[in-house]
Length: 93
Image (cartoon, rainbow, N blue to C red; front, side, top):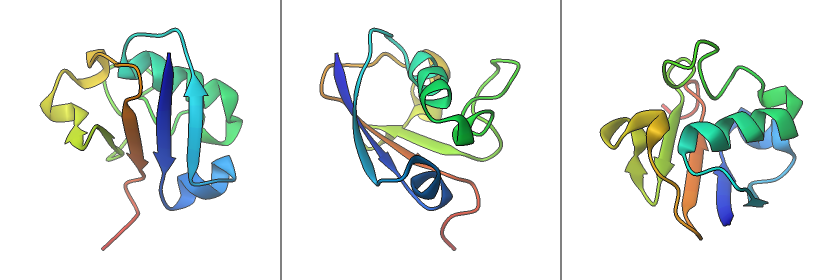
């Protein structure tokens, strides 16, 4: 399936662009975050906690404008054409 990933702040710098259309076979946000960390090594350990318990630090991830923390966390199901926004904890203010 194809999902749209929108990166903010330092994540955008690490990826090299704001929006990436990403092809994936994974079914959850957690799976997507692990794939993104593998695809873009500068993101490694900055999206999902190393122990798999949740998001890394205070990173905010939304799926279709809903914070995944308020859904099913890393187990939040992905849908084709979902829009996933990734905001580092130090961005904004």
